[in-house]
Image (cartoon, rainbow, N blue to C red; front, side, top):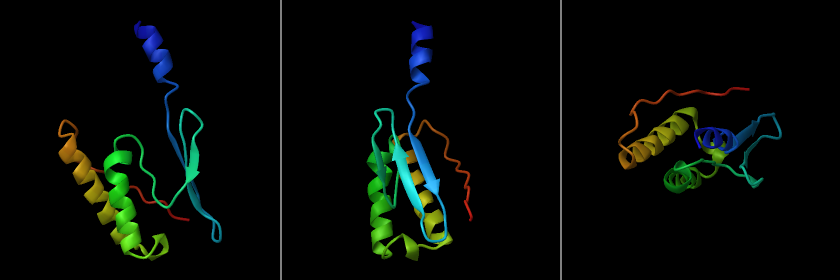
Length: 102
């Protein structure tokens, strides 16, 4: 049973793709069933339920993703991670930031 669980759990993945170019950039999502979509905000797993509404609200309140500064984005992510930590306090409350530049 352990072997079967290990083999099938390797197939359950969600991928987020980021394509950055000067004129055309997008954020894409693909899951196990082949569901794909592009959006200004994407969250996977439990964050899709709790963090996604917070991300959308923050982006819309600033007038779109082009108006969000790097400092704003970091603060939004930290707020989302805080909400997720409050919901599942068994996790670690430390967050490492990674910034993708062109």
